[in-house]
Image (tube, rainbow, N blue to C red; front, side, top):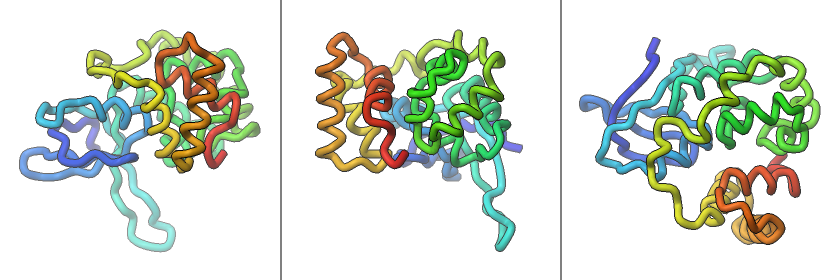
Length: 210
């Protein structure tokens, strides 16, 4: 079992990163939030990811080994907790993790269905099931800082551009993504962080593909 991996970034894609580790290159799947944090990491500096190893497929063919990476151990713990919810597998749990874990946990504990149902792969029924099965188990996650160990990394100067980038990753067309961000930024002028703005966008418009 591979529980963590450390190396330099060779290539960073929307949902995965390729890490050079001692002459070998590993492909590691990422939740969207981890991708956003790694975008600001200096490429030549090593990065450590806490990983989960699993086999994909296997019912009709040869299982494919996969690595999933997280910025912190608590992020990984939260991912595992999500997977205990009925009908939530690896891909659904990963797709939904676009917010800081502390914010995701607060939405569950506060029964914030509008925020939860706006997350990718999480509709109203799944949001209610997550609340029913996880509420009361998330105190340690609610107390996490908004970012993990990469909190000291520089944040994009234009939070609106970062919000647009997330919407593009989720399959939204640029024109509509920019429109959503502009309308939300106008409605919530005091918000200056992309993750908070995205939370309001999902409440207003729902998540792309949701």
